[in-house]
Length: 100
Image (spheres, rainbow, N blue to C red):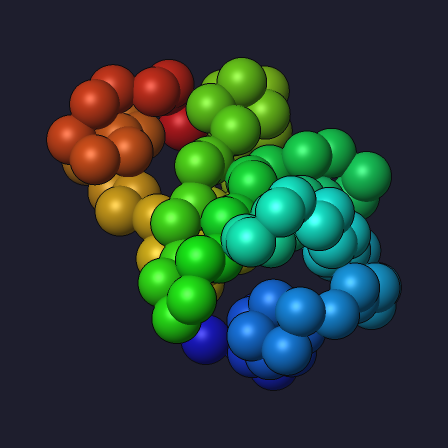
C-alpha cells in the first residue's frame, strides 16, 4: 500500500478531510454515521460510510470505467473494494465493470 493511501485511510479513521497530491477525501456528516467522498484527480472514485467501527465502500463504477488506471484501482483496493482484473477485464465483487 502506498504512503498516500495509508494517509487517506488514516484521515477516514479519524473522520477528517484530507488532500494530498492527486487524492482527496471530503467528510459529509450524516446523522449517526459519517460519509466520505473520495476523489482522484478531482474525479469521484468512491463513497465510504462509517458506522461505529465498520466501513462500507461504494466504488463509483462509472469513474472506474472511464479511467481504469493503475492508480484508480490501487486507491479502491486500499479502501477495501474487492477489485480484480483478469485478462484485461475489471471486476468488482465478481461483477464485470469494464475492460482495462
